[in-house]
Image (cartoon, rainbow, N blue to C red):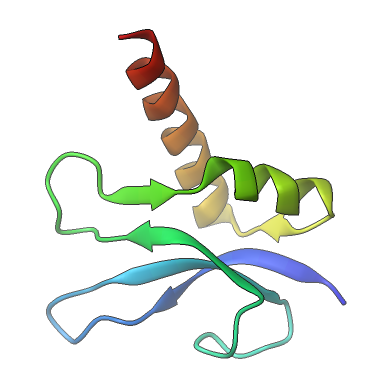
Length: 87
C-alpha cells in the first residue's frame, strides 16, 4: 500500500479550500483518506496553510511520499514554525 501526502479539494468554485491528507496513491483525488493532516486556504492572508507537523513527520517516517506541491508547502510550514518558535 503506497501512501501519498496530497491535497484534496473540499471548497466551492470561487472559494477554494483544500485538506492535506494521507491517502493511498491509487485512490481518487477526493477519495477516503487515511488521515487528515491540515488545511490549505489559498485566499487567506498571512498563513494559508495549517499543518500538524508531528503527524507529517510520522507519515514520512512510515514511507509516505509527498507530492511536489505538498513538499514545497511542508518546507514553507517548517520555516514559518521555526520563525514563530524563535520569536
